[in-house]
Image 1 (cartoon, helix red, strand yellow):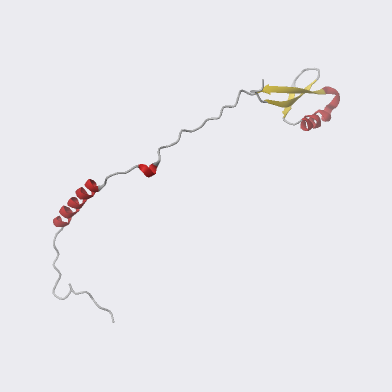
Image 2 (spheres, helix red, strand yellow):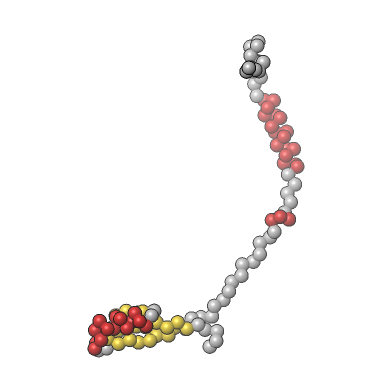
Amino acid sequence: MNKYNSEDYYTVRERRTGRKICDCGDFEDARMVMRLDTPNREIVKNKTLMSPVVDIVMPKTLPTNEIVIDTRQYQEHQDKWMVEKINQLPQISLPEGQGVPFNAK
């Protein structure tokens, strides 16, 4: 029985009918409820047997610092796509004198 944990709790019930009034985890609480009507109440100690406790260990995850992804091919594809999209943009010509940046003094 060393593998099992037992927990005690106390039931307060009527003496004549056996009707349960309450369950208490602490004996002092059960005694306090019993004293409200001592001649007609009694305390019964209950013991429950808990099943063995099993520790579950989560498996280790793969280390992410060792994963390498070669993005060069994707970068080359993206660069070609961007050049094509830029070349498709309409060319805007500015009026004379508006293409020069403004220098604030």
